[in-house]
Image (cartoon, rainbow, N blue to C red; front, side, top):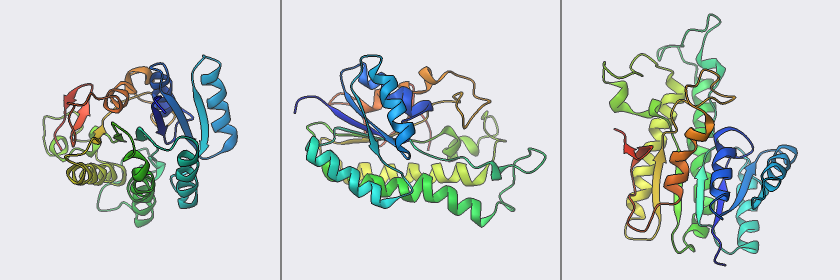
Length: 247
């Protein structure tokens, strides 16, 4: 089929939902990955009410069975996947103590580290591996990982950086690890028609970040741009609004 098909994980709200909206406005059919049917169908209905082509698909990043089922569903209906946006992620409140202070690296719990890494790193990779065979069938596959500037080792080690003192170990390092995976996957797929990049959306106002600085409409722009890169676009880069960030 000629229409592009995009799957976005965690697309029933926040940046994921706005990313779906912006892609659909470009004529792309968006599959709204969501953990619960009620929330997924609500998001689907909201986009359809705007005249956009959207469809809910059951996909829980933390449930491998849904990865496989989603791949089967997409293959049966569309035979390919043009765009995969790994948007879903978590930022646990356990990163802060009772006084609201950041828990330092020497005290962050194993439980917080493992739970954060399971969702933000291991299970995100599992989703990608399950769906990559379908992306390979696309004439111009695009894979986007939603990372964060907080995952940049370059920025964290620079005393002049605005994030220098914002050290929340589990979340930050899970995104650092994800960035590392992007470099490796992009290298593996070099020479193919698939481009793999990681996006920093900015400090966006969402349910997960009530203290954000920019609206979700702005935060979705980087993912959308990376999902629609031209044939001569870059791969293996860490991008925010067209600008490359340090790893």
